[in-house]
Image 1 (spheres, helix red, strand yellow):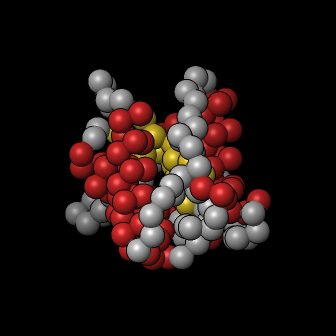
Image 2: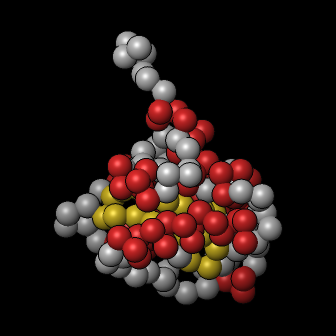
Image 3: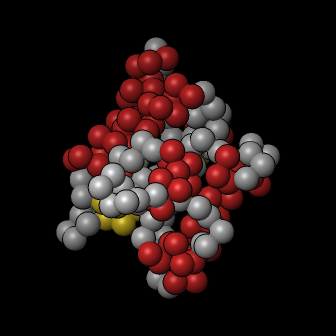
Length: 164
């Protein structure tokens, strides 16, 4: 999780959210990590990722946050800090913690009053899984499907062409 400096709503426009997503997609081609869930709010974001073997979470996040800050400042013609401080992270060490973290991230826009349901928030991992683009969030694992049977993943539940 990282929060904007002074809690400003720097991520409120769809243009800036798309800019952030573009940085995430570039990071995925540069570093080895899996995106389990994401939620981009107006002044912060949550990102549930699993770095690949030998990959550094700190390097991934430092690259993403600095690239975004450079692009954001260039876009708006400003200078200075974009992020409040270093990103916050913790290791998810149990299935229960995984379930709570995934649900917390998914429900963030509902708690903030930005959407009636988590699936209806466009910049949420559930919407990316449902609607694409497929290069933002990885397909849900069997564990995610088992832990969250009420979430539907229709494009994954349809047979692919040739399997009918």
